[in-house]
Image 1: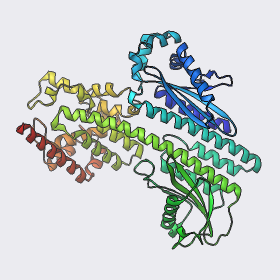
Image 2: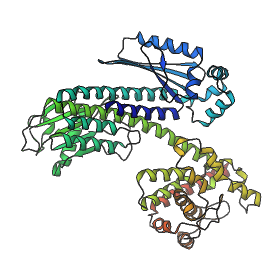
Image 3: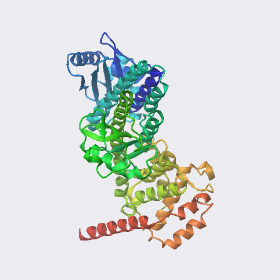
Image 4: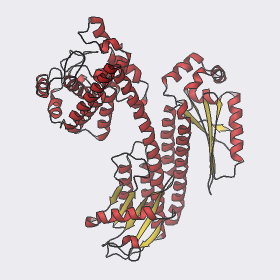
Length: 546
């Protein structure tokens, strides 16, 4: 069962790396590389040429001669083709992993044809397939190497913890509860799992199998980059009035604790518990390590009436759990950094749209805000709400392909100009379709100008055939268009806009969405409108002065 869990995780990680254009191989006892079970044309393209194989052997030899317990070597084999070798030595085993990835520079490299010939691949087909991939940017090479190293390291640590669990199983015999706990923690590790959900699983599982009244985890959120909605404190068990007390004490411990090993602290003599009440005499404290020191603690304790001492096995399980939390949070922080980079790219695209038409400056941000509020009012989950907000930001990205003279024309558009405007959903969809993170966003980009009655564009679909995310963005888009000044008219008063929204219920808009939309508190939206108006007026004054 242990091996099945490990294999599932590695496959998931390989699939994630593959989407980034990264291929990795393990190393056999004789030093040769072993392709993964899913090896394909990209694997062959990267590893088949003689110069590449020679460089791989040299890097592996350099790694083997290194006395360090863990090392990462990397180089650019040829322009646009990067190689890294990660080695790790533990008490049980030594492992070496080779990873190869490409940047967009490979398409212009003089070695491109050589790689295709060595792999017996058609260079035109390979170029076409690479151009469709979300290849790593040259400026992201160092961050990519860091990410791959951390990913491989986390797998090694999970493997090490799993092996330790095997030893523990031999010692405990039929101790099913402890084994179940450890596998539950491993099974909860996923890039898509939120930190709060994962830590809640950890505390709940520990509380279920260990004889403690409560388990708590406190993370110092200023020491690690995690999602903004993570408050840093999770509890398994009922603390009652002790909840804020434990949170405060846990923060004191996290700020002052030394070392990485679990310890038992006496609440009666330790100054950090001064002024508290209701604790048992001892509390188990497990530091949670980050890349640059302690980022939190895992605590386990009982109520004041209990005098039971923690056993060695319980200490080991708590320590293992805290280490697993450490690995997960470091991965989550790296994922958050990558997500921030992606959102930064999106914001750059939005700024490019704003730059083409100063009259619609801030339109995409306002539509994103309105669409998100509507999704929340409709009761959708956080993941869908996030997709809706992103869809609002990029819904008009296709206007990059519309001539600026058409976007800024003050009068009525002629037929050709209107057709150019109507093309922006399809242009936007083509721009974004090869970005994996946009898979659930494309329907909004493509169909936000469809109408409930089927008289919209580009496909004239109607009713529930229009994707829900597009129906939501459509309402937000129309509301902001009426509420803001355009080249051809002034902004309409709020009461007229709301009346128009009601009038178009069931014709232009999904009738079930109008009510939740009108229930939005528009105070924040009005601030955004006023900010955009001020920016526009300042721009006009600057142009006049020039």
